[in-house]
Image 1 (tube, rainbow, N blue to C red):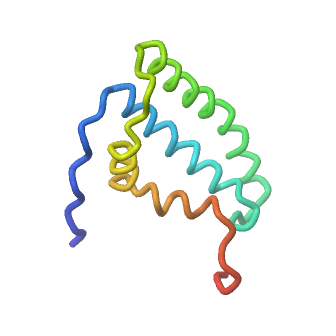
Image 2 (image 1 turned 30 degrees about the horizontal axis):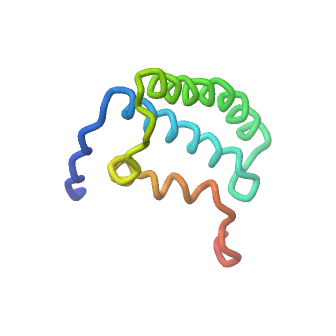
Length: 101
């Protein structure tokens, strides 16, 4: 049985969209990473999708800015990213250690 995840912190709708879009972009970057990818086609498809997901991320930030949300609450957003497995997802973007296959 999987352990129960902590609850997501309270986020505005715009903050939730920002977190979701950021994680989608992160996942795509992980698929593009040549040190972790398996095929050029997989990387190509991820790179193509990255364009539209980057636009969605920009739009989420634009909405926040237009609403006067000029500061990011990094501690709260960081908690949300951790609950949503952001640390594991971010590791796919890095170069793996030498001993990792």
